[in-house]
Length: 164
Image (cartoon, rainbow, N blue to C red; front, top):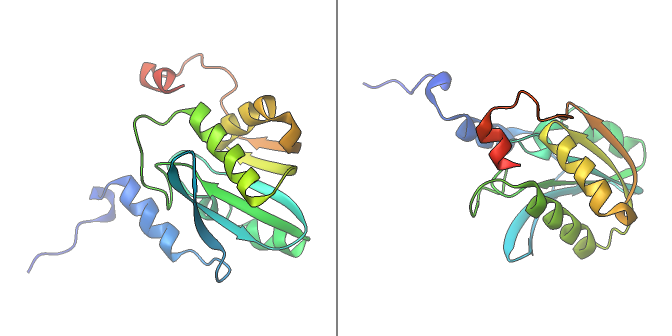
């Protein structure tokens, strides 16, 4: 009888997807809609002033912010955590991951949801996206908290530079 493969032998993306499916999320909080010609997944939970959560590369908002979601909801915020295309619950990817289309998708999603201003919390790859978003769409951002973003491309491998 064959044993299942050790988790270290499974593709990282598959493990992240499986983990995202197992995370506790408020019932009915996950949604899908179409923006810029493709479907996106997003978490929307809570009521109050909106906070957008931007996840790190290859992850999902529910994963990167699992320890903050309930606390932010309890503090009176509406949370919106879009999974960027090709990541989390949104596995469709047309071409390479690029920041400009993710920024445009996030802005389009917020407009579809009727969110015209928000605070943002952005982690890692999402931090880069958040910084770009605040510059490109300043009218949609009140405050931005960034953690773990690359400030300078110095020292990044060429394939990462090409993806910028």
